Length: 113
Image (cartoon, rainbow, N blue to C red; front, side, top):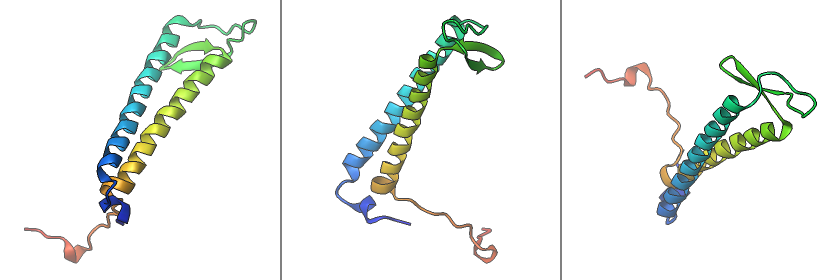
């Protein structure tokens, strides 16, 4: 399905905006990974209820415990990264390339040569 927006005058600015959104989301995702592994290396491996470290973070079997604020920060970074990347793909699909629904060819339409 092709939208009329994809062939319009907003094609170049939309391509720039979509790329910017995707690259920003990717950069935030890399920052999320940095924070994740920073927490993995510096937080205690046993829960400490007195200071609120009761939220487990499991990194391939290595469990550390985070506070509510640290856990919320990681969640917000994840939502922001995927939201920006998804928005970039939608902008690209609507204004730049159009969404194409691919239908598999019928057996008699397949070309063997």
